[in-house]
Image (tube, rainbow, N blue to C red; front, side):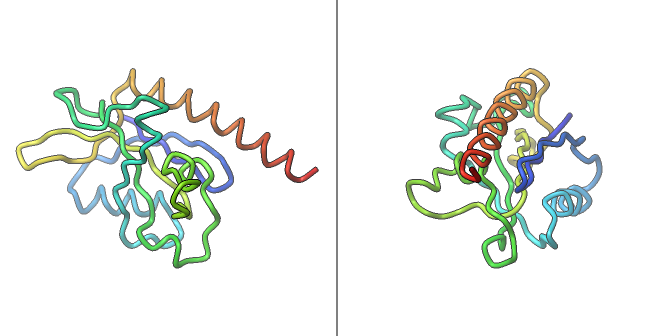
Length: 147
């Protein structure tokens, strides 16, 4: 199953969720976030659920629930603002910015609780389309500000 990365320069890339131990998965996710991410934060940004209508709780279907991962120390490093992550996180309301690249991952119920996984296919298609639309709007807004 796939996950989505959105960079600070508004580039969306798709990656396979890693197979293996939790340690191996966590290493892969930290490296994908980038900028020497040593620990990521699990974020459930309100607009991901209110505007993009993703599920906010795991279901029987692995990856139907979607959440966002960010660099826990992103605001302490030389990172650029992530416009998409910040918008979904409602930064305009509380002024806590999302800095650095963000990942969108699925969640699944396991015998040990909730784990991260790839995003279920139909959910992935809808989310990817919505995020691409937001990216186009974000790029257009950035261009308008430059003029």
